[in-house]
Image 1 (cartoon, helix red, strand yellow):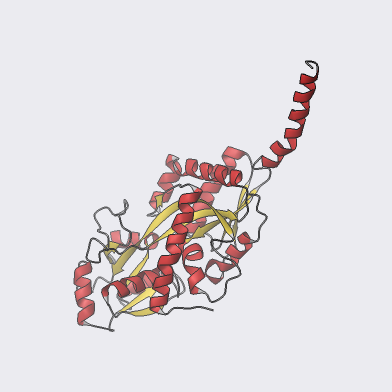
Image 2: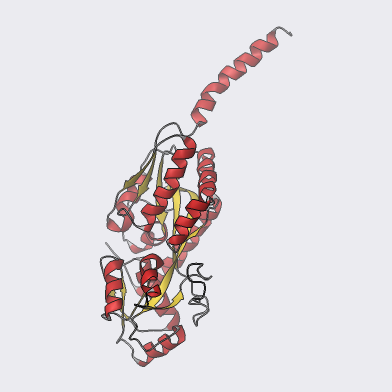
Length: 322
């Protein structure tokens, strides 16, 4: 029997070769779909992570911008991609937390059609007002709003944006009457807050922070449950007078559903490694964001929680898009 042992071992090793080849990853360039235009937070995060993946794995990582329809176009492309881990999408609070409740019909589902990989970053929204508004904090703002119901307006980068729904959440929790004016992006909102055409917004922090520091607009609070390292002296909305308030943007990598778990876990570990690199962490922090890096399971739980939260806000605000 002894002479047969080397033959048996050789046969076993030969049989294992196809399995090893099948589970090798990555075997070709990786594509990260960004469902928005270049140079935004989503795009910057995808490129920062993609560059380090490429350096470590020796495969090109291509960022593929597919903007349109509040992220729905690019996200659908990702949902229909081959589930081998070589196509990912940088999902957002909009694409994977809000849109499923906001749009009457989507050709993809944020849970059923995706395998969460890792939460990349959390970005607080910042509540800012025009300098001429006679308020210094959230409590004074609420008193001013209630003394002038329906007379103040707020801006957002568009219907269904996190800024729109963040303010609707604020209104529902405080019983405030503030008129919504949708814009086509944050640049117009920022310009009109500074100019006094609108009184307030609760929008993504990065474009507003330089103007706050320059004294051109006044910051009242940040929207998340903990303070931002970018403005540590600024209270949260919950601290400042609206207990339980929590709203912000988040970004994370997802793969198409049915991507092998071993590949998802490998991508998740690599993403977490990259987000801990000092140069990457510094770049993300400069955006006013907090680098995270999570397990697939933690990210999946966040997505489900966010869907439920925003569904209620959207229903209460009676918002629906085609």
